[in-house]
Length: 138
Image (cartoon, rainbow, N blue to C red):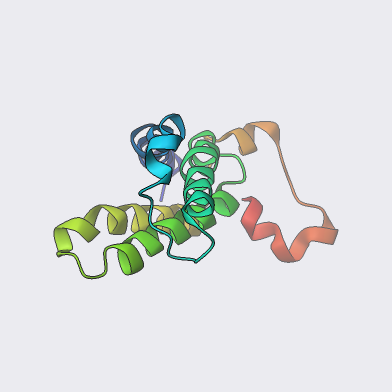
């Protein structure tokens, strides 16, 4: 996938996740926390906080192209939980949006941030010591 395509994919899906989903949860935390599902058993406040971390901070990193592969992991987990746990008994129309986000973040994870990213501009590279995990930093 070319770098311009990756930029468009990152900005659209990361930005949509950040502003249409994450920011809404963050700015209305007290309203959401009492009714938020708890699929991991730690309480709705922890589940909502983890979703906000992924949907605000990780989505922001994806938009900027900073530690992009690493940032997509919590996003993919959140979307997988939404599709396959929260909406598992719902009709496909309820699962569709989280599946689309899941696939988009998977493509970004596989492809990396590309040339038009903050990581590329800053010249962030990996040292030999972290070579094993260097694919997460591209």
